[in-house]
Length: 248
Image (cartoon, rainbow, N blue to C red; front, top):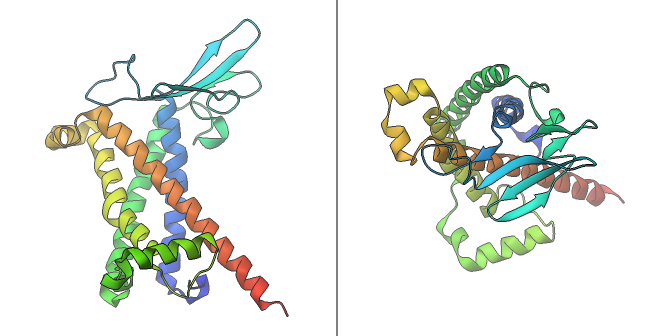
């Protein structure tokens, strides 16, 4: 795995912009989600058939936060459904949203602006990689896709053993993000825009309705967050192993 100092300046700058954009998008997206903390499949919110819902149950002594995924109901008091000392009913807590107070209009403005920042910055990154030929290194060779090779890499990852350069699992995860998850997230975000609905009504039909698009958008955003967290964890693991290996 290459160190950050080995990367060209443009790559480091676009990575930094991506990190900022994703952070703002996630926090502002949670503000938008809190306006109606439930997800559905189909065209409309039926309110009685969500596949994910964060809510509050009031009892005599206190309020309980409840998160329901399908038929599974979890007590998430203090985090999801109810947060803060006063037991405020919120999907996600105040520290995770932008702005921290309830303001759907501001959350949308932050979200839409940084969505374009992410798209334009990604276009610069992809263009630069294509022009310099660096993009070829993200495509695995045929022999890297054999079950035996993939099994060895999974075993090496479990032992925190990393060879120099990009391994096959990294290549596949990057390609999955760039070619599938991020485009799908952008497309479903456009599907939820009334203006885009008027211009491209086929988008709503493509994703099976606005509520289905909202659910897919939320799932893709969760995958992006998971990708970033795993990426940071791997960078930290490589750095720690590097320092240990440098000790006499």
